[in-house]
Image (cartoon, rainbow, N blue to C red):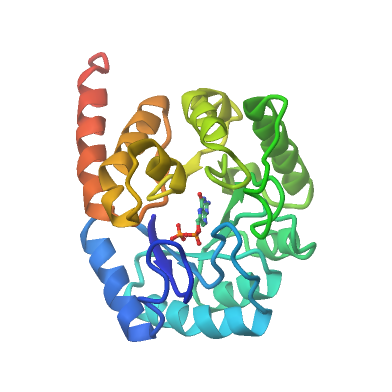
Length: 267
Ligand code: HH2
């Protein structure tokens, strides 16, 4: 999943792709590098980011999604939003994936919007608090237990709301109300998240935990650190990665896959 931020303030690439033509060119480049999903986001979820109105988010993402649906008809278009109206308009414009960092909880209408479109998948992510305040003092008795319990409860609720389980991916929400230690525990214990039985989408790309651990302040210098997390997660069974640097991840994952398959017993 290649990240396409159409926001003026995302932490690593804010404001660079906010005209539809530039956004399409960026998406085309990511697809050429190996992306099969393009995740279009019009509201930054960076810690402390200001909320964006529905009208403004629609103004940012819709022209881009329309242009992408036209230019890249075989690519899955994902909309990174917590607003049901934005998801609904994005689906009408060609999006088939709803990536909601609030786990489809912030807007009470979101589950019904996804349920009403059986060709649409969604990602349910865990977050403690809200982007405005989530990094102030994240607290857990046991972060892995709590994230697993939350995701299990959300899967059950969404299935009850009419979204079949085969349309739901889960994501532990690296960096969303979590300290460096919480993020490391979640990455170490990914098998417990995979044991929920849903495909896992992971977003570690260029995140501040990697910056803290490597001592690199510039997000563009976090490619190797991001790739390391993806390869380790691949070995646990994760198959979807939300990334900025598609080519580097694709190459590393091709090798990880080749090695994993070489180890499989002959059919
Ligand atoms: N992280 C961000 C946004 N959306 N969605 C999922 N499913 N998982 C994630 O980890 C995730 C996400 C971070 O967003 P932001 O701070 O706006 O920066 P960027 O989009 O450049 O990663």
